[in-house]
Amino acid sequence: MNGFFWTSGHLGWSFFSLVVFTGLWLLLSDLVWRLRSVRIVRFAVAMSVGWIIGVGLILLGFYGSNG
Image (tube, rainbow, N blue to C red; front, side):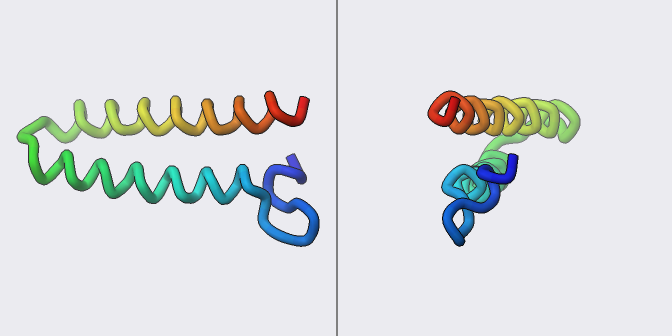
């Protein structure tokens, strides 16, 4: 997991991509929240599941390229 956070004296690309994905996901969530009329629980579950899938794909890509 060390290579995930720190690589060759700088932040690892996988950690950077995770941070960027999270920021973009929050912006997308805010946009959808403002444009659509949905229940908060359903919306929160959908956004959480989407974020977990995205993080899983990033981790899978990281371990797939290094393994």
